[in-house]
Length: 79
Image 1 (cartoon, rainbow, N blue to C red):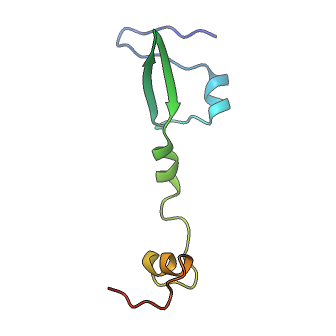
Image 2 (tube, rainbow, N blue to C red):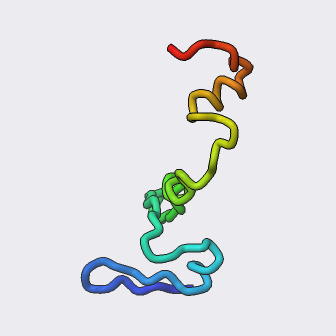
Image 3 (cartoon, rainbow, N blue to C red):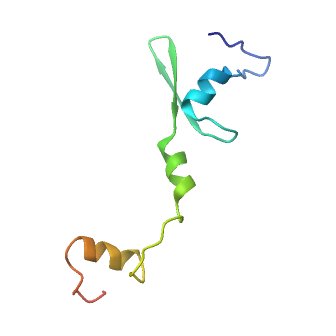
């Protein structure tokens, strides 16, 4: 596969690559250089940010209470 660098330094990734990696508009890629190669990595931060706030903590008033329960400190007073 090939991609051509445009006038402003932009490239278009082939559709097969975008589809295989689930890249959509706005996906953040990390760019690394390694011995004359360019390495693009899908940002993990981007994946995490997409699901942030989408899960409920059923039975817990807040994240701190859920963490205390998971860690076995459910009886400790908040402080």
